[in-house]
Amino acid sequence: MIIDDDPFVLRMLARQLARLGCDQVLPFSSARDALAAMSEGDTSVGLTICDLQMPEMDGVQFVGELGRIGYSGALAVASGEDGRILQTAEKLARAHGLHVLGALRKPVALDELRDLLARSAAHRAAIPRQMRPAYPPEDLRRALAEGELVNHYQPQIDVATGALVGVETLVRWHHPRDGMVFPDQFISTAEEHDLIDDVTHVVLTEALRQARRWDDAGLDLRVAVNVSMDNLAALGFPDFVAASAHDAGVTPTHLVLEVTESRLMKDQRAPLEILTRLALKRIGLSIDDFGTGHSSLAQLRDFPFDELKVDRSFIHGASRDSALSAIVVASCGMARQLGMSVVAEGVEDRADWDYVRACGCHRAQGYFMGRPMPAPDLQSWMVTWEGRCGELGLA
Ligand code: C2E
Ligand code: CA
Ligand code: CA
Image 1: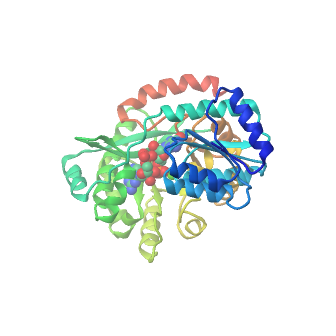
Image 2 (image 1 turned 90 degrees about the horizontal axis):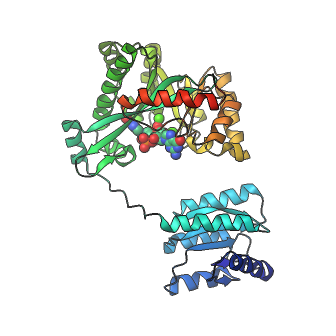
């Protein structure tokens, strides 16, 4: 389906698509008509290309409507608008749950269109993602009792040298029926049902035990553990963490707590006291997901963080996106002035890697270097990574 109020553009696009072998093209000069055709008929449209600037119903409104009717095909926006507007429209469409293939700059080049069709075919071939179930708190309580939570660890790399300098602990639930369940499916349940302290205890204790094993094996790693703001409500938390580190034989400076604020805090006194006491105990404190939600400037001002983790939504693609890049560069500059180190998360490809090296981030984490893995896999990952360092221009 192609939608554009300019009849010339419409004809041109239809002809290009025909040349590329598309034999079923539905052209519409108004978004309203296109929508009517789509919600009426049983036409299973595989790909929709729509203009942004249109009278009556514009591309942004149209995208919202597509989301509402549950359109499951692929979508591309074509426009003569500048990059920022196109990117925003793309993000909006994603937020509506649509499968966005990208933006096309008008006039549309044949090669770009060919590329788009290939990606559209790939989307159709992909298996529909199942709705993720939410687990009731009883299940999680049982999982805690049965020891079904296991830690995975993702490498953190010093970008200047390529050396492995730390890992982030990411919890997984080995569910007896559903297999591996990711934290997005149970951390908020844990927070809502007073189970987050138990989760953190389990994760932290195992991470410290593992840190000790790595230390014994001659690996000098900082181990990061995610903590929820709700953990920072219990005044005994700093002593618990310090005692756990001591019992495991891990120096406090080898432990980092990553803090995300998922919702607004009414009373900041407890977290302020707890974070300050943790800092006095020389435990590393990292502000996680920096730049999103409430993890922002006010937190930087109020709490004694020594590390800033730039959220992955700003890192991946920053080399091609001037808005993202501006945010990353400013965050790095600010961190440097505050004497904090910067970790870039979400380094997914070579372009991201080259980018974070150039912009002054200290450490990097992401699929490009390594995915989260069970502790025993780290050694063999290291061998592979050291092999890749050569081709990345690292010693
Ligand atoms: P996070 O702290 O932002 O952790 C990073 C997430 O990004 C992880 O997802 C990781 O697998 C994923 N990731 C790593 N590299 C890349 C990349 O290159 N690209 C992309 N797209 N993603 C990447 P995961 O393991 O599903 O964890 C999700 C979130 O759950 C974490 O986000 C963290 O906030 C929370 N979480 C994980 N473990 C714990 C825990 O033990 N306690 C608490 N309170 N929260 C946890
Ligand atoms: Ca984290
Ligand atoms: Ca993050």
